[in-house]
Image (cartoon, rainbow, N blue to C red; front, side, top):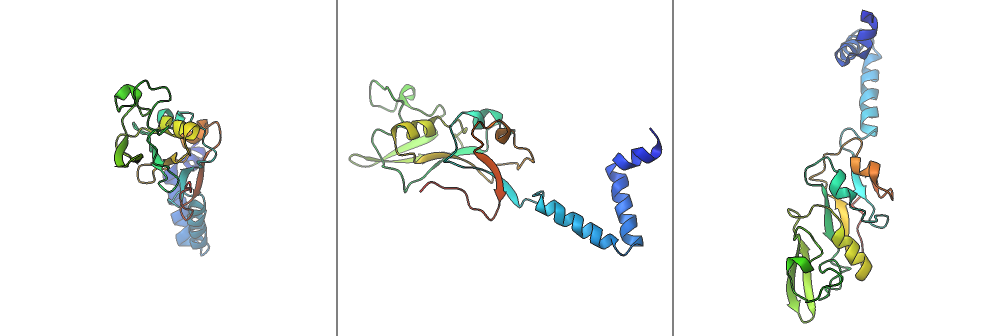
Length: 190
């Protein structure tokens, strides 16, 4: 390969070329500014982020297993406005428990991320401990099957690496994960 072709592929050579062009040609400034605008439009400057549409999500379990992070950036979210605060929560208990107690074998969440607190008979408040949640979606599937769907999955913005090609989005069978503008709020269940 000749030296000219090597310079075309080298990022350092391209930057040097653009700097030279910018200092020698008046249009160089426009070229550099337009390049910055193109990068911004493509979302490389953090103007876009990954989000799950809770109405499309099928709780397939791939959010837990395909995230590039050791523990997925996808976490369970609880829509308190939708919740019925049920004693027999489908997202908290497995469907065929023999005894109604909080023993680990009776609970839906494999990591114990859902915490239950007594409010008054027969109501309980459920909260999600994000540090324990692994994004498996088992509680969400249970809540959608036996409850009112107040639990759903969402990519946590503060944990996500904003990968240019999200591995979870690439394997999502329902195309529930999309890159959206930061100005767009999380899709919530109400």
